[in-house]
Image 1 (cartoon, one colour):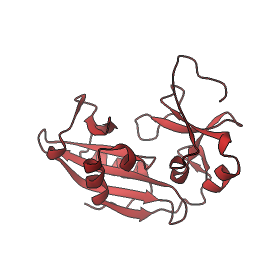
Image 2 (image 1 turned 180 degrees about the vertical axis):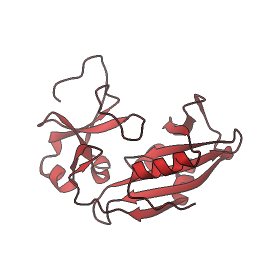
Image 3 (image 1 turned 120 degrees about the vertical axis):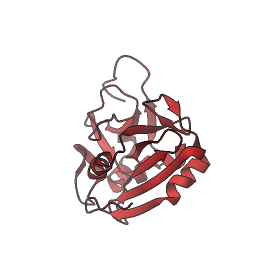
Image 4 (image 1 turned 45 degrees about the vertical axis):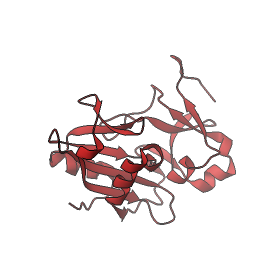
Length: 190
């Protein structure tokens, strides 16, 4: 099944209407069904469609949506990779299946200054001052996610003290400081 959509939110909306109502996540490298609170057996899953949305060939930003059927339970759900990192955190066999099923659409948001209500930071801005930006993981004060789920990580501008959307090329940059949430108080700065 092919989708022609303008963004991830539209893709999710169309797929939910087609019965993909389960929420899947990657946990410890494996595909996990949140409703069943258990991993899916990789032998039982089928990637019905996979869509990669890139801002453009040189924009350095992409997101992926996977519509997956569990052949054993006959359930269907979505795996959303808003940050384009699943190929790095999945079990290699699962990552290969996801990538092999994916087709790419270019969307015209390369010049858009925001994404999902967050200011978008491009690689050239990051390169000017890489210590200014960090990746917060699991913080309780994340803004609302437009997919009806919750963000697991977001960029943070330490100078402006605000969450930002870091393009994929920044997330893959080894200089990016990753800061997991470790307590009940959210720090004012990094």
